[in-house]
Image (cartoon, rainbow, N blue to C red; front, side, top):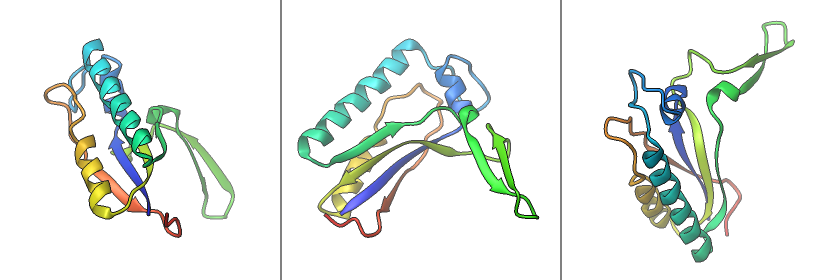
Length: 135
């Protein structure tokens, strides 16, 4: 079965990762960033080696987001990010092909072990089965 495994974040988190502390997160140091990147590289290598990795990507900060919607008359409305009303956004994802929900949950628990500076917010890892993507 294929699963979408998602990690969340916020614009404040991206700012903290670029060295700018805020009320939500302390500033990340270069050492903090390298620890996170090393952790993710090892995780991705393990998932590729096990054959479970289909795809995985980190996403750019919400400030680089574009929202496409419609106004009350049905006309397109395009808004560039970030969006004040949005607290959490998708920060990165993996598409994994795992034999069971238990296995993908093990991987999600491992993702939760990613190093970060003390005081940084913790977000849950979200698992969603991909409809029609068995095996």
